[in-house]
Length: 173
Image (cartoon, rainbow, N blue to C red):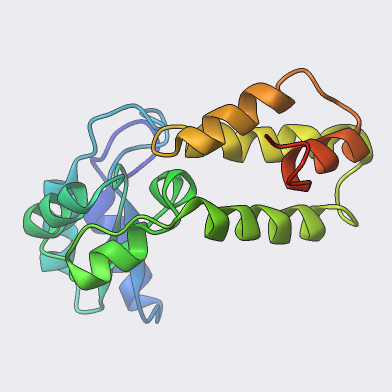
């Protein structure tokens, strides 16, 4: 919505649209507000009404009910999911179906394995554990298995140990 305040939000949106953007994603807070609730979805509605390109709402969508409220307050059909999708990888499916949907732990474990394989060549061995623990921390909000995995890995730093404790079925019991 802006940096320190949202006073220029409409002017910025108009300039972006005039410059030829085909759509605009708006985070429902200022940079200074960061990630602190609440999200100001109604301000996105003001922006949406001021420009002629599609506007996509973002900010504080963690549940299906949040998505419904965000759409109602912003007037946006499309949403961008951030931390809510990290905490609940089934959230987009739930929103699309407009019904509760939680990915089962075996599917999430498959996503974690894919993520682990993707970060191995990109992240130093020392930092890999932090990346997977960060995601597990978000997943703990909805999945007791993620909580158990996080607690097993919490003090581990060695990538081989982390991989064994997370993905080896015998070690994960």
